[in-house]
Amino acid sequence: MKIFAPLYEKVMLWSKHKYAPFYLYLTAFIESIFWPIPVDIMLAPMALAKREKAWQFAFGATLFSVLGGALGYYLGSALYDPVVLPFIEAMHYQGKMITAQSWFSEWGVLVIFIASFTPIPFKVFTVTAGVMSMAFWPFMLTALVGRAMRFFLVAGLMVLGGEKMETKLSKYIDALGWVTIIAAVILYFTIKH
Image 1: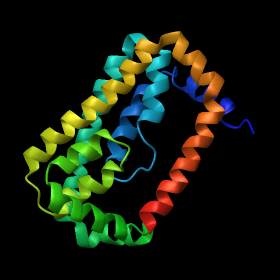
Image 2 (image 1 turned 120 degrees about the horizontal axis):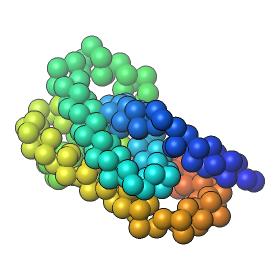
Image 3 (image 1 turned 60 degrees about the horizontal axis):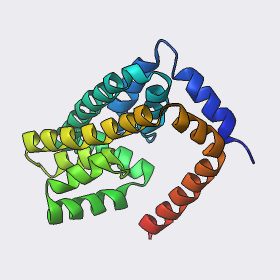
């Protein structure tokens, strides 16, 4: 079933829109607090569509993601009971918070790097860092390094891949989309139990 190819074509069109950078940076900011959609979904097609601005997009995504992480940290440290806890309970994230807290206890600041560079939900760890009163500046520096590595890697792959990358993506986008959905479902049920 080909549902991802038309979506891919739309995203490539949207990535050329004059307000696309604004939406990318907004997504990067709120993804570090609560938004479930990864920044890469916007960054990759934008870097591919406008390769001359790929590094600018990666820098902006990094900056706004780290600023969003700072707000997530603040929410965790100052507004956990009145704001964050009801949201966590409504979203059934209690298990994720407990897991994040145990990872903080075991690995400390390294967990921020892992969460900022990998597909692990960064938002859970920004809020948890605040809840656990992690030192703010090491948190910010680690988040900056991890997010920069991730977003510049994505932009770099798009720049290096160029038209060949775009051709391959458009050819295999449906297979990649289904594999991603299946992997997400498996990951969800693995983490849930």
